[in-house]
Length: 300
Image 1 (spheres, rainbow, N blue to C red):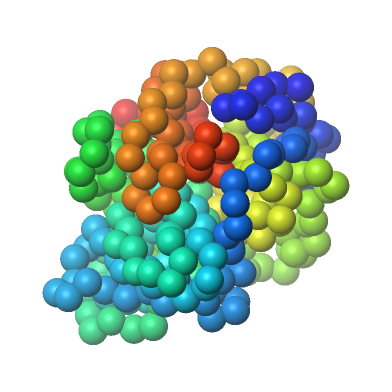
Image 2 (cartoon, rainbow, N blue to C red):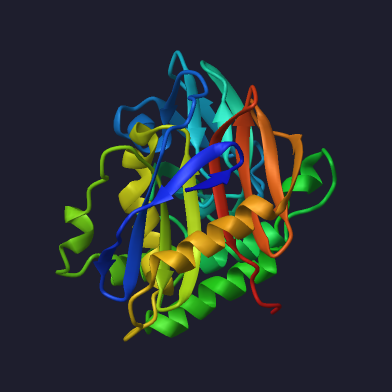
């Protein structure tokens, strides 16, 4: 058992999907008020995403149509608009309101009349999430706090395309993710959360790729498959099994990391990890809503 930002987490035995080990993280979050997770909101038509007027690459407008808050998670990809973008931080959007959210472009070769925005079935891979998070501004508040290094994001998208042998006319990460995840392999579709599961740790060989922890099992269930689909892009072919001890050691590093709390984009406060681990999360009224943590990325 490891305590991470006030949440006791227990590592279970992994599901193995190819060269990716998916460890369930069991725990009991204290809950952080009523909200609807992004996947559920898009499925039920409770969210509308649009461009600013005039459009800007690093921002989108999210309109929450639900009577409760809307949770959107760092690394969640929004497909459409003038170009595909991904969330730079986890955001809890107020009910019945519009929120301007910070994003990064993951489709360098398209900028055109906006189309309807949908949610991708795949999160960003952990390596890209780590690089994007590590490069966010260090200001205590203001828009620069959530500004990524866009050039590095595009570089990571290109690296994934080259690694998986995928050509995309618009240099879209979505094309790479579809090529990797839309094959005949049914293991991802059959993946289901275990009782009490509030998070996952994904690893390949002896290397932990990242960790996502939520405040309740229902939210983990909504995001489980899309998170794993993203981590699959970082799996190393032929990698051996990962030991539970390796994940526990990584979680201990997360627990020991220095956490800075600052302004959140919507409701709550944002937490950033500063140390051997990079990551960020969201806290509402002192309770953890979501945390994403990754190994520090290598310098470009």
